[in-house]
Length: 93
Image (cartoon, helix red, strand yellow):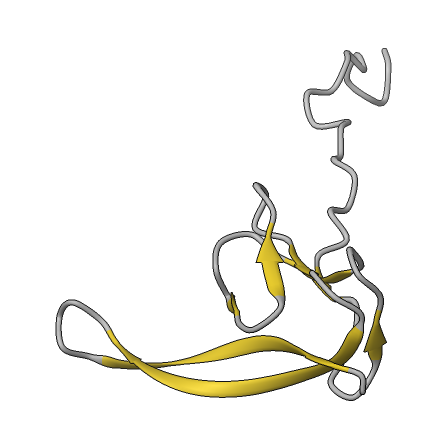
């Protein structure tokens, strides 16, 4: 008689790769044109001046400059106020 049950194949032997999301460059740092500032899913951070958004919601710099984060209070369609962080790139003079 065996001491353990017959060991068949398992159904949970997989794992997905990490997505490596988050802030890549912080406030006060210099960003080159085209450099990724934030990788995100959805619009956790909003684009500001001299910044564009990619099709996967990645925020990247349009020009070379210094990154500045600001907060803004936006009104939702329900009337609620919500704080959003705006990502800006200020040109280097």
